[in-house]
Length: 116
Ligand SMILES: C=C(O[C@@H]1C=C(C(=O)O)C=C[C@H]1O)C(=O)O
Image (cartoon, rainbow, N blue to C red; front, side):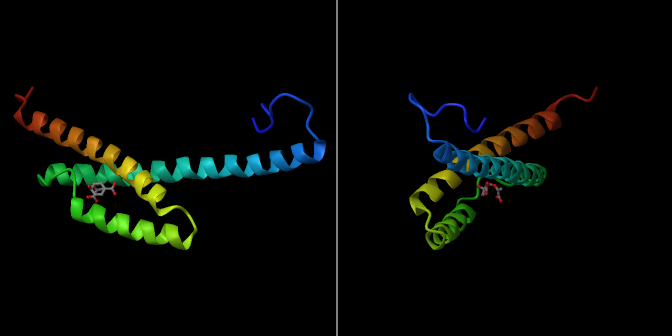
């Protein structure tokens, strides 16, 4: 909800209107972020399966370093704090690597399990 909690006292209707407009925009951006992350994870899951199939390591630090350098430059151009952009990407990548480790474990277990 866009207009739920605005603090204690009465709020000027014009202020409320502007607040609602901005919060609607924030809600749209949050929805876009969720959809973009879902697409990114669909792609990284496929990378995880490819790596497991070919016994490649879950993490690729050289690739990560290139991505971080690129994202920091993009953030600077966009006037976003590059340190925040780096932290955000590292947070996502850490989750992806956990997924890749899990996929590799499951794949190895499936190969050693007796056929049923
Ligand atoms: C997705 C990959 O696996 C890992 C996750 C990355 C990511 O989320 O961008 C990047 C490098 C790897 O550590 C990859 O190797 O491309």
